[in-house]
Amino acid sequence: MPSYYTYLISSLPMLHFGAKPSFGFDKFLQACQDKIPQEEIDIIKQAAFGFDYQGTQPTLEKWYVFDTALRNELVKIRAAHRHIDPLKYIRRDESFSPSIAHIAINAHRNPSVLEAERMLDQARWQRLDELSLGHYFDLDYLIIYALKLQILERWQRINSADKPQLISGVLS
Image 1 (cartoon, rainbow, N blue to C red):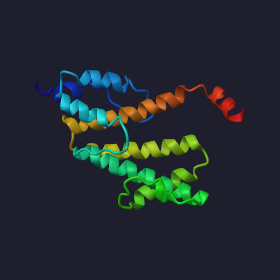
Image 2: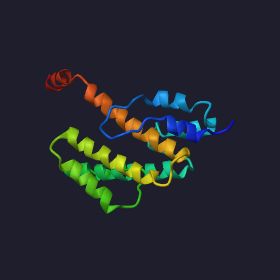
Image 3: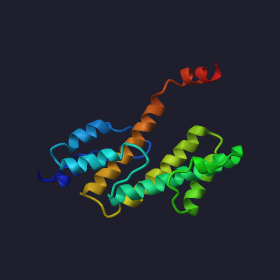
């Protein structure tokens, strides 16, 4: 089966952080069908599942190293705040990065949980932008697109949630 990256990627709408996605991850996967090999669709699907990526795709591996390191920094901060041992919550301990620690500390210090989550997702989006440099019509671009689409879908769910019902559930 030939790969039609140029056609497929040219037909995808641009994604902007904070904007409503034009379509969801499932529709994106349908758009990929018959245009790229099934093995590459399977790699894109891996971007949607779990945090313990075990494959060899370089962009996806770099993404999970970053995301795991960010989550680990959040675990360390929250564990220190609660005076518990963070080691049992740490996943694949990656090398320390001052920039990731800075992102986690700033998010943790934000009094608004929603704004803290937005800060974390903006940092994730920025990292995906960095990973996309030099990738325009290839599998790496599609992986990054899929990850960004998932961030937008998450915020779509958050923004469309029935907030009064959620608040009454917390207060009761």
